[in-house]
Image 1 (spheres, rainbow, N blue to C red):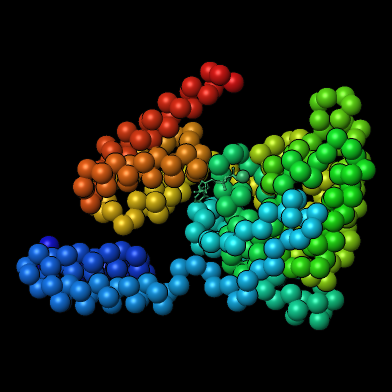
Image 2 (cartoon, rainbow, N blue to C red):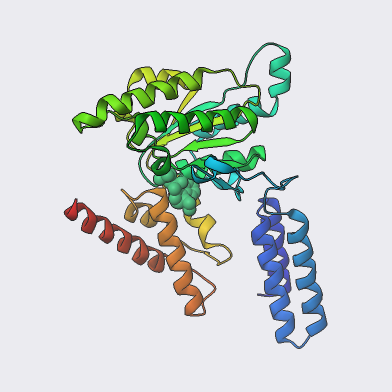
Length: 331
Ligand SMILES: Nc1ncnc2c1ncn2[C@@H]1O[C@H](COP(=O)(O)OP(=O)(O)O)[C@@H](O)[C@H]1O
Ligand SMILES: [Mg+2]
């Protein structure tokens, strides 16, 4: 690339607000300088890029180390330092604006409380596997700068109902003590009507306790997030208890493109035929598309290419489609 072209693409990425692209062009300039023997100039550019990256602080800045759960809780709650924000999740506009409303209420919760209102905090995330429910929960925590506590359902639910309810009580007590995002992932395990006869009555009672606990007022405004791949298993009474039900779906063509773009950085992708890519990706989840893009990037790195071609991407997408058929046959 000539100097003028480099400056042009720098300007374009700046105009588009694509900082990652901006920095990656700067690094290309550094590489070109190095090839011409201008080592110190190359080094200067690289250092400047590192400085920008450092200042930007990609990770959510967390003011204090979050406290890890102690005692009995340590086996039930898995604490995670959120690494992403809502901007990192590719969502439909409708879903995004609902999330933004929740975030806003949480951020202004003191103000709401001054007017005797409470922020939305009980959310049900429903949708197919791999559509970003777990990711969104982490991103919510990251955006609100709260710790994420994932409830380990396998250690919460025991064979003894009394014990399960007692553990659930511990979790809810913690939500009242420590502000955070509490995620009940794969929630249908608690909330579903189990088919096995003996289980049904018992799980029903656990579920009733859950509903009861969820009604308790909370001064911490901790978020209770339940995620499920099978919303149809949850009855209406349950759905009504949540402040919001967020429905996730299969990705649109536009979302396919955005997910791929996000994953193939910092590779260049000058002429990807997005229509063909979307077409080949029909039926794949957001997660499967992300994985395919990731594989394509790894292949490019290993064959020392810095550009991604449509065909490389489609090959990986088709491989994912192939895996789907294998599993479909098994299931
Ligand atoms: N909406 C999305 N936007 C961007 N990446 C996504 C999205 N959904 C899924 N992914 C990718 O797939 C991975 C798994 O998604 P996950 O949140 O676990 O799905 P779910 O909980 O709905 O089954 C994520 O970590 C991310 O890499
Ligand atoms: Mg999940």
